[in-house]
Length: 217
Image 1 (spheres, rainbow, N blue to C red):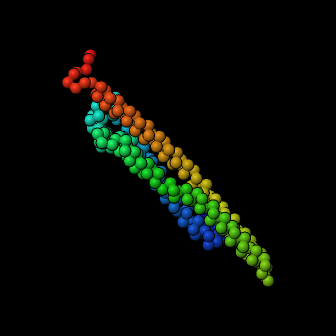
Image 2: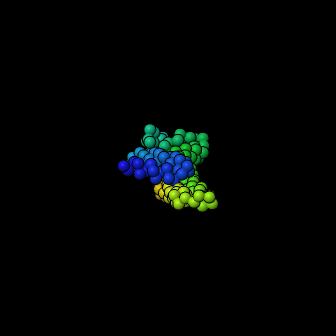
Image 3: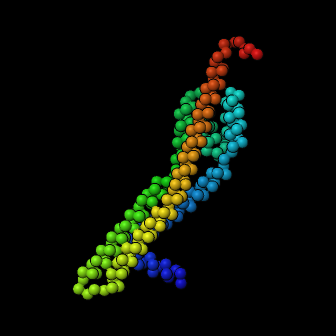
């Protein structure tokens, strides 16, 4: 019974409801995939291991920090590990490249969601225009049919409501996921800066000692 009502409601929305339906399916798939991805990434975070890495870097033990970070699935620690592997070449470039890879993974499909937020209302507006055109053409015909006029107005309202509904439903998770990406970007930038400062400080401490002379107690 409910299925028949939904089908009839869909058909009354006119042909523009088909692309709106595709937008709805894409929105549900993308939101579900991103929600599952962020839930899985949240379980991979390892704050205790992060503290161990920073502690090793404070003691100028880069090799120990690299060993601790090896094999971690935490995105921040993965970035640090790649940077420490290039500590003698271009650590800053390695950190930037690794951070870019992590942000690309986190921001996946955000462009699709942004497009849906804009496209769905436009499709609804297009349905409004076609529905009103149908209603006015019925008014201008020789035989005026009330059903044709109301059908055109109903088509316009249904398409508009569905388009706006998809945009509203997509906008909330889009803003949420965008906020998560921005927060991850801040964490990556902060961690990269800390690693660079600690590693450079360790190099300066080592180079400040003359060769062959031990450090004074």
